[in-house]
Amino acid sequence: MGRIFATLLLTAFAVGAPWAAASAAEYEVQMRNKGTDGQAWQFEPAFLKIAPGDTVTFVSADKGHNSETTELLVPKDGTTWKGKINEPVKVTFDQEGVYAYKCLPHAALGMVGVIQVGNSVANVEAAKNAKIPGKGKTRLAELITQVGN
Image (cartoon, rainbow, N blue to C red; front, side, top):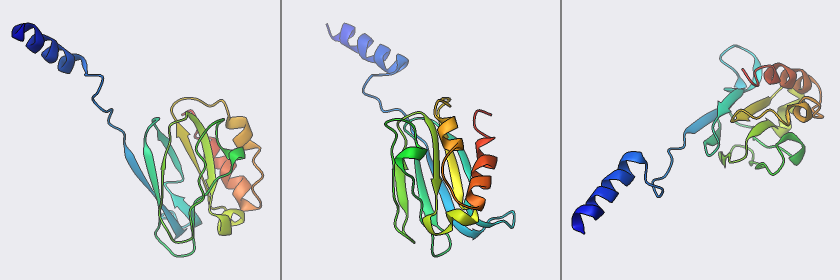
């Protein structure tokens, strides 16, 4: 009996025990007055492709920024968030799809970002048609070209 149990236990570990947690990755996006490319009002990186279950922490590298989204800029049943100015916000992405987000005070100046979770692009058209004012709309269109690549 003991030998059978030991064999079953070793087999479970060899093929991946169901109780073993999957390793999710963590990313950091900095909110900056000026990006490393010299462009003003940037999230760095502005585009991320991650896996479901991964976490992104938005950190204000310069004062006066936040990260937020609305239901219109995320996949159906996707996570929405609204970070406070100058405070980090941590978001775990479980739903596949395209998430477009912004810095509320600087969206019209082009401070927007895109996260693609998994391979789904089902909601990319909705993100393309998001109502972001000024340079934000142009910047969002640039970032969406990276989706699916």
